[in-house]
Length: 254
Image (cartoon, rainbow, N blue to C red; front, top):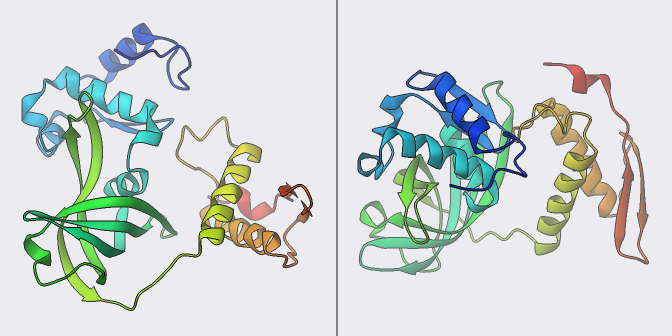
């Protein structure tokens, strides 16, 4: 049992129990801050290790994964609930049974056709389909996102990749560290200043196209480029970045 006193979703454990009772045994997928809780008992069968827990544990573990979003492979989760498009990564280590990718870049798509991307660090995938590759190889591939129970420090639900197909060697790539840090800062600023930040429940409800335009404009501003989408100012001496962004009508579209 976890402490829910600071939860964005429930006031306390009893509040969660009321929610669980309301949807118990149904086909409902409940979107909350931090993810989705799937009440469908049949979906437990697809959870790797799910046969070792009860249905109540299954629901509690999903809730705890949403409450501890930072400990879950979030971009793999998005690919699980939405549509994965492509994965890219560089092999860092190979053992007798698995391959470890130093970093996997994720491309996926929301139901409205707008794409998203992200990355996950130090990802292990079964070696079977990757036997012919070596440490240092950079690959692009498609794979199946899946849920599993990990037991390293108590039972937790997390997300991984399996059954890679359409595997291709690609040229060595690098995501510049500065750009990576800048994008993280930009995303944090957008979330903190968003008009919908108390309504999104951890799943962004802002217009996806407008959001991507804003991210690109703000990143360009950080790099010293001018943007026509809003007013931005940078305090280069202090190292802090301040943004005053304008809200376009595009953000109000579905």
